[in-house]
Length: 81
Image (cartoon, rainbow, N blue to C red):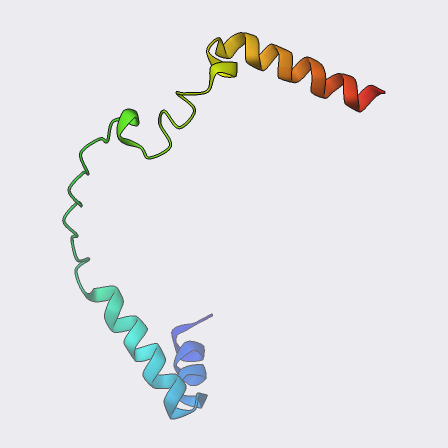
């Protein structure tokens, strides 16, 4: 598209559309605003999470790895049978 064609298309736009084009063109010439990086939140310890230790008093989960193996074994057997 030539400059002349571009100008003709621009002039054929309704005034509200021309205002939008003007805003866009002007924004391209403004220097980009630099944002300050947000301060990193201090890392929260996992032990500070509300769910941490919620099953600590459960006697059936004292050996968590064994509890998981048993749970999986029982669950998988139900699905097959």
